[in-house]
Length: 92
Image (cartoon, rainbow, N blue to C red; front, top):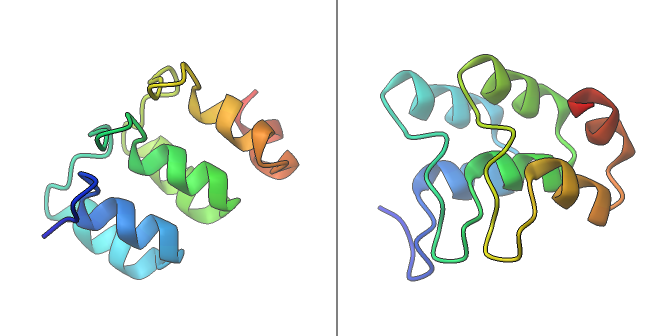
């Protein structure tokens, strides 16, 4: 179950950088592109945490690079804003 901000279990596991659980949730149908109440997707969160392995996994499983949060930020913008250069280079 998610939280009051509309974060799904996948959002929360991306935030924790728990790759095994991220893989489990995706393999069992979790929506990679579902935004929370602020428009952040699990992919935004993975990019913001700088976890290359999770970002790569979500990308290969259909994460939308062009999803924008309520501030108009794509996952690339979010990674740059949080100075995650490794992720920005991966996404470009």
